Image 1 (cartoon, rainbow, N blue to C red):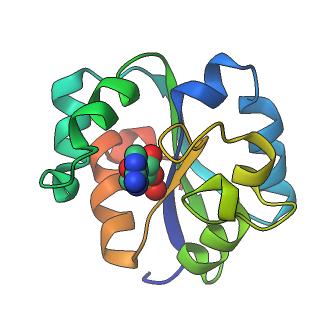
Image 2 (cartoon, rainbow, N blue to C red; image 1 turned 30 degrees about the vertical axis):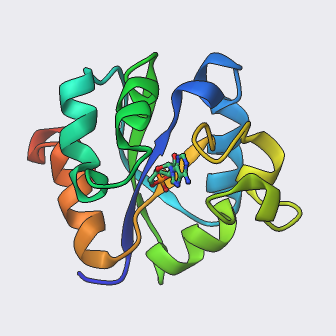
Image 3 (cartoon, rainbow, N blue to C red; image 1 turned 180 degrees about the vertical axis):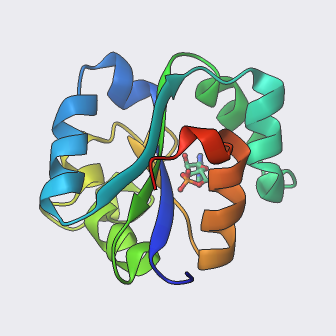
Amino acid sequence: MANNRTFTMIKPDAFSAGNAGAILKMIEEAGFKIVAIKATQLTAELAGKFYEVHKERPFYGDLCTYMSSGPIIAAILEKDNAVEDFRKLIGATNPAEAAEGTIRKLFAKSIEANAVHGSDSDENAEIEGNFYFNQFERVL
Ligand code: CMP
């Protein structure tokens, strides 16, 4: 079903700071159901594949180094209007511009170490979920 799933990562900064539980609590309290979840660590090569769309950006190399610097949590989430509602919940990419009460406002350290990732479209939610999870790793 389109329009009801998104994909998220709790990034190394938030995981290492011990904020994964608080972030997952906010996600569930906002009405998202966890469909798949795992703690894992990317290699720089896998981070490069995940963020390939940004490969021409000046921050790409640092982003791959950062995203492979420690454990993360990857999850598929379900809710009506999931992509848009989740992006509202996490706030702007740059935490300095994120609205009060959003996950990035509360937990992000910088524009790069910005606590969480959220898919930007239904199509990317599907691609990104499939990057991490096969059909046996989903409860729904
Ligand atoms: P995310 O939503 O996961 O998508 C791309 C990531 O690149 C973004 O979060 C940030 O972690 C990072 N990013 C985006 N813009 C910048 C920037 N200007 N400088 C450094 N990192 C950035």
